[in-house]
Length: 115
Length: 117
Image (cartoon, rainbow over all chains, first blue to last red; front, top):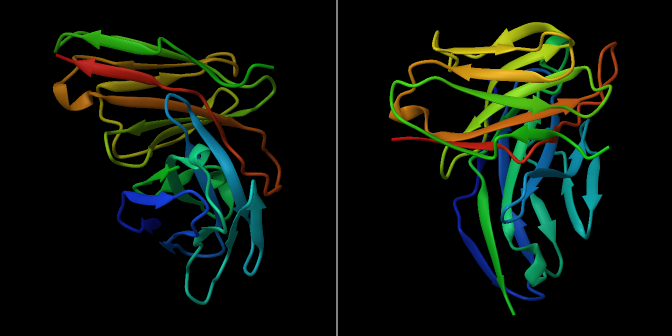
């Protein structure tokens, strides 16, 4: 079946540091890949997505590239801010049929950014 | 449109009692999903509706769980004879869809946190 593995957390950084959160996946076919973010006290929000190999998703300074050869979708940001402190989830959506929109999530990575 | 709405936000119940949660999806989203999230874990898929039809159920959804979407709009998730292991955040999401499009973005509600004591 489908699965997503994220790097172990939590991650603690100083403001303006570079961020990488690793994500690898196992899936059949050609899944779509997502990063969701959960700010304290709020619901999950879509941060970015990529729907085919070599696509780069980007939003709010975050980027991730769909690498089929390494089955990875690592999240990066060049300069983090305190307001980026949140829990980040990597997820995939299976290809085809009724599994569109049915998401398989990683376990989440807690990011804390200090001033 | 205010997004996906879930009620109640918090529910504390005694073991053995029944509970029901409600989800109101974004208007005209014909797909609705229920997930369960336990502490320190990512959400796990429970079940999925296309309009009023329940198309898929996870093995996580035991016989004590039932979900409905009677008119293809709001949905309810009922847990009968609750157990302490049912304590979790229950998330609802909706998405547009149908056809062969690959628009798979799901919009999540804030969830209902269930505590079984």
